[in-house]
Image (cartoon, rainbow, N blue to C red):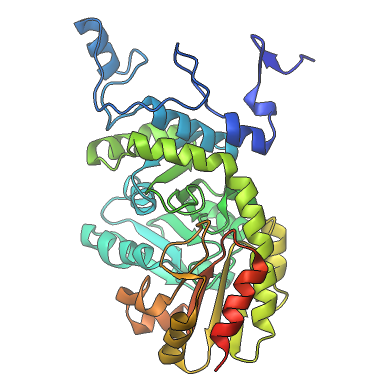
Length: 401
């Protein structure tokens, strides 16, 4: 057996997770920089016409245009690919560009999609309002009802889409069981893994075909820039995804890719710390008399706690909870907070809280919100890197009537 090196360098496939997050994909220029190089160019030059023609024909390696690829973006894609354990990664301008691209590149008029009804507001809009404009139908099912999943499939079903845990209700779906159903009907499973992150859950190990991320969230982790990514098999990327994305243009900016690379370096450290605080806060809220209900996969009271323990390494960084009195009481609590910021973003180093019914899920309508369990008294807390004791003290004083 070899010593695990290639030409005197370590083999990335033998690295641990944290080493991949720090060193994965590095391609240093002749200048030998320690940090990843930032290539802020939109175009590339060629030594001759033959080289240009060969690159455009796919017969020669090399970059041709910023919308098609960039060296800094390539390093980000390779690092995330190594972390996820996927064959391929395609970076996008945002998380929603990743969701739409992963679906639209493989669907045609007459196709059918099955999805869980527990969805982020923009995902719900794509599936129920945007794709149907192009003759693509969608059936929403209750995520934890496998019989309902089985009944929803049709001969025209090409794709299945789920979030697990879901936004903001933290529904945990049985990824392996849904994948088995999808594959039995010749459909691909797309998993939005943004709440779990690749640190806590790797859906491809459970049978998913495609995984999407909003890198804006935990991967950046400091509220600096937008980005997204699609992880898949090599054939899917080359034959279906890449042609669609190159010609529709939702490419990741090189500067954003560079920022996201810096975020990946500390992703595991941040997520672990945030998870530890989140479960501590969830336990505090569960025992508070002003709280009606608390949702966090790490709590034994969570409906899918045992499933979450099998699929995820921890319960995640998000805590959703319900106050009595509906919207008025929820807004009163937000007004009284002194440390936690009101914001609809998540995965940030700073703790952020939002009222989903009036922000992230405002446009889907009351009927759809109630089907997801989103009431006017629901709040979603993204736990940051502050001391858990400070966050608990802030919540405690805000909950005093």
